[in-house]
Figure: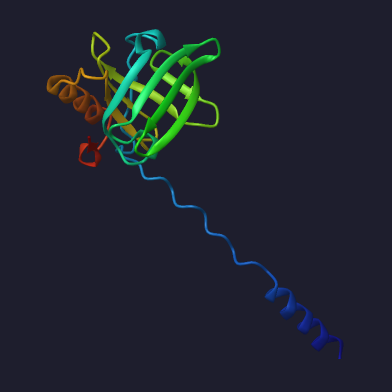
Amino acid sequence: MKRPGLLLLLVLAACGRPEPVAPPPAAASFRQPGTMIASTLRGDAQDLSGEWVIAESYPGAPFAAPGTRVAVAPTDGGTLWRFAGPGGTAEFLTVTEVPGRYRAEGGPELWVLWVDDDFRTAAVGTPDGRFGWIMDRPGQASEDRTRAAREMLDFNGYDLGGLDGA
């Protein structure tokens, strides 16, 4: 008689066990896996400082949608990136350990992949390829510089077909 009781206890215990939780889906990457990626050595946070507008972006980061205003400001603690636009707002305080690479604690790692000589247009991406964008100084967009920024995204393994424009 002890065995049916034990069996009943096992059945009841199994009923109370929660369903296994599936891992969250991996974030989409807009980069070809295994492709090398490089940041520019041109300039620093002071050169990037000021206002920018995102002209084209990948949909992986709602805070970086086309039309978003980006403010870059060097601070005593690093470089502050502020985003305000149609997809929402975000703010990241980043540190720079290698030129062109801005790492936010608990946030994204932003790499400046390319910037023109006068710091009017820049291509920014993440090593994992979850998002990236092309940004211009307000009122200073140029087809030639946008084409160069797109070429640098392509060179760094990004799929240009995924870019959304303003």
